[in-house]
Length: 604
Image (cartoon, rainbow, N blue to C red; front, side, top):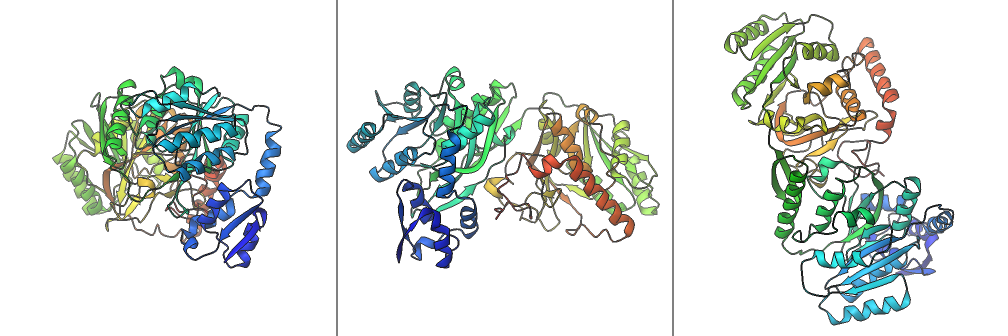
């Protein structure tokens, strides 16, 4: 059944048809025909085969015709209307797809653009199609290929004819949303100093449906070293792109990744628009991406060399990587473990440390917070005798206060690196300390966290996200080995916080933030500690290749006494008051993802 409906009545019609969550195929037609008064909409069952959660999000967040009209009114009062040059090399593409891509530019609400096309196609009809559009719109410019060369050549050819203050990259078979350039211009009016802007994106499937949305964090430099997450829609200040030499040969398929790695070394004015502004066309049978992986690896390795951070780049798959840095100096690491009784649990932790650790310079400092069980005291004495040069135990018999205990231990520790560790953990990875020191030695890094598993090999911690009112653990209860949200579990990523069940930092960082907050005796002291680190301009990182067991109960337990409940409420309110800015908008987590769970599902 087909209906002709006005765009601003679309959702009403869909609801009356029992199709509240419109097919992404319908939404594609909206994008392609927004200049028409009416839309031809297909309500067939085939058109409704799409991801329900994302379709709900689209229904809620997709701009209506009234929104586009309002945007057109607002942009008239913009004080800053920069020309944005869209760089689009054209290779072999079907005529229909090419026309769809060009129309997505022509239909932009924001009119101050130019489309700079480099014709690198071998197909005869492409030039005639391009010339047709040149005749229709003076904002479209074409440069023909001069000679066969690497994939960067057409990008640079298009860049050469660009005159805009900013450039934006568009693949010849992808689509811009109608409000894409408007949103970029809106941000520039709010932040005219911006040198790089990127948005969220999704996939356009063969049947016209939209799928696989990538809701991104704000600027996370270490996440970028794991994969090119800022790609689309990427907008860059043209003067910087020109000054760094444009696109480089030898990075075929990763030329934009290499460009961004170089550009972000020249500026910190990097902004994220948390909206879907770009549809990347998905092909079910893509060509081999081995070349892309190799060139991405090369681009990252070059960046490390430029930044004087020597190391190696380890490919995972599909353009994802892990960077392992060379350790400049094997300075002393102080492993700090608070404990009280629970001797067998502590002993398992200590055995794993001394059996597994390969790092040549470390000490273990146990703070005994009032143990009175004979077995525990015997275990402590055993390790004093067995490891007299690497094991110490100091007593601090006070009411339990995690922050006070660890601050006390930090004053007694001898190491340049402080590694805070729970007594109910067990080391799995032999080079765990090396991997943490690799990151902690970097002057840009504050806290380093790890992958923690429950005994049943499900995830207990893979970074902290500010959800559940204050904070929760990323991908909690996922199976070990899972990829997570866009391989978030398997890659090194920036987080606003990591758990102090296993956390390393440099002593200078610890002292700069004043250690742990003693007002937070039990909960959120590690989150508070990490957010203080962020406030000073350091970045916190999660490492997927450092794995430990954490033998805590999957249920945190209830604050089932009046005293515990009062303390818990007090600590929660302290965090909400002190860190409202971070809790309301975690920069390492997307506002389009849920705050009700830790699984990176879409916020509906």
